[in-house]
Image (cartoon, rainbow, N blue to C red):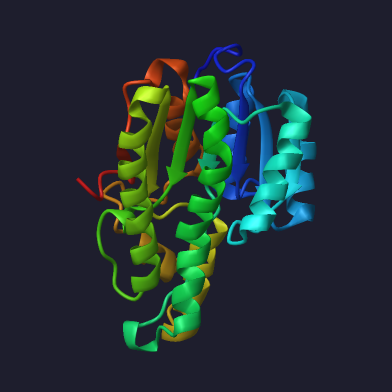
Length: 261
């Protein structure tokens, strides 16, 4: 996506799960559009490696965060503001996926999926939104999943959490519609990330299928017959963050090659 280097100049973007995969791709696109970017995650090593990789593109820094813990989120946002000022753009990208038949989905797994994927989105949005409302301008983009738009077997907890993210997106979008803030979701299909590589390894371990066969099985849900690439998700996120996308609000955009119509 070709963007003006000045389109987001002066804006501070905060990206959770920014150390790798989709989050790192989003950070890159926001930097190219002129934003200052704070990436956040649990792995300091991964975050610092991404900062080193992208530092030539613009202002980027990192903070550690456990999105499931409100105190951790509060500290991370305070540190980010101290460096780059109030947060104008929030990308809730941090997430985790685990699979199991429903009757083997224990309460610990259930709570873990809700905490990371849904409560984490709540914590970070609660921290960022006051800055946006005060400025009368802001963008919240939740990286959900096609699992938030449809059902998949063996990932009931993950689907429930991502459906919750979609509901939160729609509800909050209405609350802030007249305050200069938009809230949208991007819903990737199977994407070439660590989560999908973990899913492939799980399929191989449980079924004895080859890695290539397991990967083909996941990619087959995409009518284009391939995995989505992180930069394709990042381009959709960037578009929703642009000043000219202000009429986009409360939407859940599938980036999946046509899987969910």
